[in-house]
Amino acid sequence: MKILRASEHKRMPWKNGKGETVEIAVFPPDASIDDFDWRVSTATVAEDGPFSIFPGIDRTLSVLTGEGIALSVEGTEAVELRPPSAPHAFPADTRTAARLLDGPITDLNVMTRRGAFRHSVKRTTSDDDVRVGPSSAAVLLVVNSYCQIVPDGAWLEPLDALLLEPDTSVRLRSNGLLSIFEIEISSEAKR
Image (cartoon, rainbow, N blue to C red; front, top):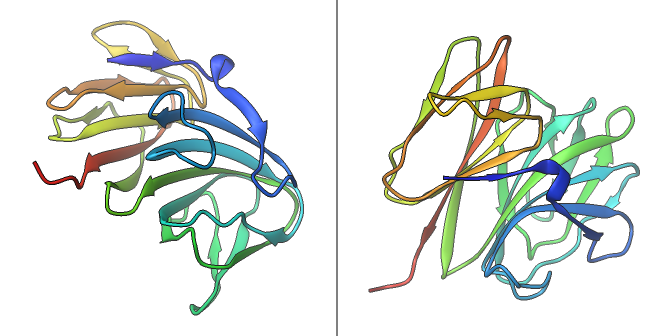
């Protein structure tokens, strides 16, 4: 288990140069924006516009804060995403544009290289303890509220992440409403 503190996440410009992304985790660890196998990041979207194109990448988007966005992926009907919405998966190599519903938002992006890795994203909100794992794949938890790892005792702050190796489990506790994103990333490579 490894804690990835929000204060240590790497900041970089968007691929299209129209904003900034905060990289939570990437594989391989030294990968660039063009050659990663998987990547988890957040971004603040302050204006309407197109998303960057990532050839051969599958993407899942969730809204963390703000009113939301209308996401238009070429060839599909537009979908509105708000903080309580389920994470939305789409191919990152398809033309995609976002329209803000009412002011800026912060989103969570999960991207995996098609044919090499796959991912799933699940949002959990609870006023009870939340247990995650064990899983046969690596799991990255991104927290959207203050919580404590039980029985370890370490505290996590909003946008901290917790990387769990396969077959590991963890229990999280909050004094209020606990909000987490459980991201499971697994290899598609044949062994």
